[in-house]
Image (cartoon, rainbow, N blue to C red; front, side, top):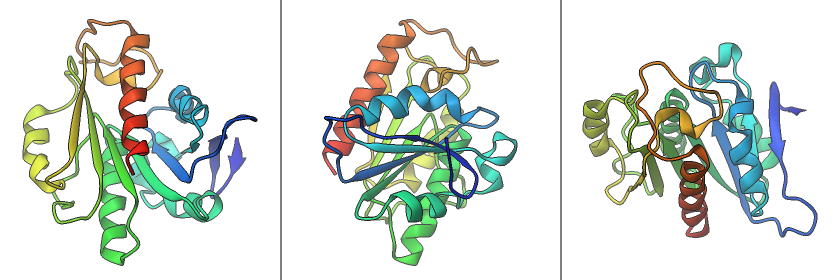
Length: 204
């Protein structure tokens, strides 16, 4: 854990692993501790990606959606920056990406995990690679809102459905009220998530 505008978990590639030219910033889901996504940060770091997970006040990214600014300044020099977010964290990540597009300093990529842009966030014309990851059995995600939001994402947004996965499989924080029942072990879902993200990052 380091300090960069507040506490941030930093997962660096271990010795012997070549560091890639990508910084991944992960916005946690609402009311979820950043440690819940450490599994993903460590897995990405083992493949060469410097990955950081900021802590937000009250564990809500909505309290500071621009938190990535400080992290990019601290860790992103010379790197492509990809912002990922789970659930409400994904909504805030999409808002941040839209703001960056308007300022002319766009991100290299956006990863939405069981998330979609808010009504006021339009990325449909953005020159931005986007990966949308969804759990097949996720019953927390509002599917109608997701379908409506799809037109606010770039036309070439990639959608990957995690077979048998649920909303809470993106972070290790236990079962979530109102979620569906998984039909695969957590490790199987995490393997799918990691593979999809690695494929996406490799293609940037």
